[in-house]
Image 1 (tube, helix red, strand yellow):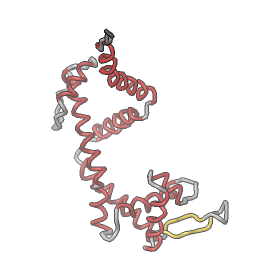
Image 2 (image 1 turned 30 degrees about the vertical axis):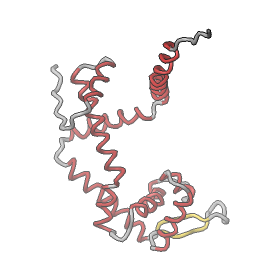
Image 3 (image 1 turned 60 degrees about the horizontal axis):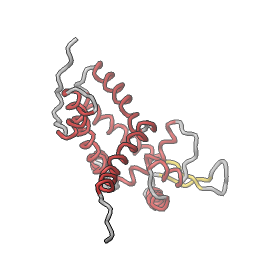
Length: 210
């Protein structure tokens, strides 16, 4: 069965193509890997700029910032079956931000009526957060907007393409969590960085004392 031609519009870094060939990949496979890296870089930039969040907020809540959306969504995760009570500490953990920042944004979200403070059912001394009806409507709107964007981007794909893409994307996602592979790669990088130092030591001639 002939291999499909690479139809990706993203042209990868040619140095990466050469490095991939050096790892034993064919020319076309090396180009595909470099293209994947280029696509990932573009997605990463968009995520860092928070394009999706800004587009959605402009449509449904222009007076909110992306940080508010993040906190409201983090509180709303409990509605998806998470039995853990939502505290400021948990919000900070879910979003990977400093607890003090999570506390400030959470307080602002409460003041705006998207969440409320409630006593913990496990420890009355602890304060938790839960969404108000306004907050739940906001989370629902976010999900609807996200699905709308997905449908717009993927609606013309064939069912078989979506299934293959989902399976391959899930399979690919493990590359960043493979501890053994990451450890081996880190060791290779460390060896490359240390190599010039070893070469300098080997070429350095001892000084003869007269």
